[in-house]
Image (tube, rainbow, N blue to C red):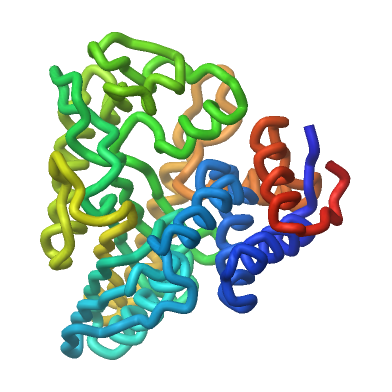
Length: 351
């Protein structure tokens, strides 16, 4: 299996996107976002998405270079339309504006509709923490891509509906980024492409029986991804339902339904808060620092080397993959090389 340096993979991803009809500047931005996800261990949100993105471009479902349109705006709120542009482009534009509002008024609340897949939510939380702001982000699938059944059900009723939180904390911001399902759909897709089985506790087949076969999720009728929470899955499903409402209804977008009324994408809810406008920036920083230190000082059970906080696994994987390259299984790498051959993109990596 190949391991690709991040800079090489970013160049390769940029060339693939550009050859597929994306302007070079936007291609570079999207490629950097995808490789950033790979670097942090979120391969489900990495370059494996490129074939699906370019298929959406070819169908006219994602529009390269789309305008970011502000429909309504106040000192603290912004309602935007992404024009079915690349999610990474439009979500970053939204967070840029909310950071400015947070710094000025203390609070920036914004929504975005008609956006392509925005990728790893933690990326935008990191964007906010770099500016010293606390953030929260939620997305749904724009009324499309049902994957999760309610507890006791055997037909999907929600998407995987992720949410993320970001808290400034020096060089180690606390970034919590997770789906409200047992796993991300992209992780199931990675397993499917790789020809691998899924772990226990991820999937149910169309009859509601546990399965390890990733193909069941894409069958007709489809299987489902379990809600987060194990024996208390009602908590994960309930949280996913609230995310659906925040992202789809509050935004003026679309919530999940039997027959989708538009293509797959993301409706987005974002919140950015400046601690200096609330309890005070110095107080906030001191309290977060003491809380993090107190949590890490917890006595550990045998076999536990360290107490982890949100963001630690990503930082550890980032350091490893910056040094050793980004690993690929043969199936996912073959998909990218086949796309490169189709688009006439030369490979500058050892495949």
